[in-house]
Length: 110
Length: 113
Image 1 (cartoon, chains in turn orange, brown):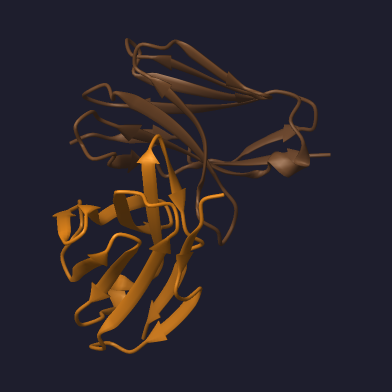
Image 2: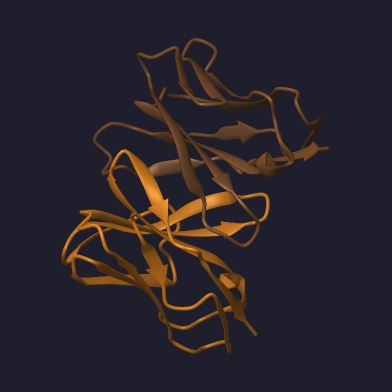
């Protein structure tokens, strides 16, 4: 079974803090993604990566950056957290057909 | 820009009936259309994928149809059970896009005993 794990299920941070969200997949997938999910808006793509050290902006990259130093690990970084970044963050990887999602990190920025 | 519409109101049905969920999209037809299930507080789980040249796909009690003329997909769950209660997400994937998906907001299904 494919496993996608995320470093935290719940996280509370203060405005202005730098936040790291980690995602690890164990199936050697090339492509990995970070989404955020907000009520009524569905999942929106923040960034994705199609190979080590390669990254592409998604639909809402502002205020975020990513890092992919190893194939199995894809990190999302909030450079200076703001209250409008309070959300559920979901990481996913894919072998090509269908996506495998992690359990999500519910981030609250106060 | 591409838009996906799923019924935002919850669908309530009786156990044993067929649930039908709708996904409508605007502009370009995707190469693939996917359906996911999401339980509260958890990540989505991939259910089915249908290609643009396929009309219908089945998997156990699930059936998906894809009409590129109407720009619509229907997702059916036959002989529904309370365990099928969840939010169902429709997602579009376009060719040459590194498997990027555009998601709808989802429809919540509640199956009552």
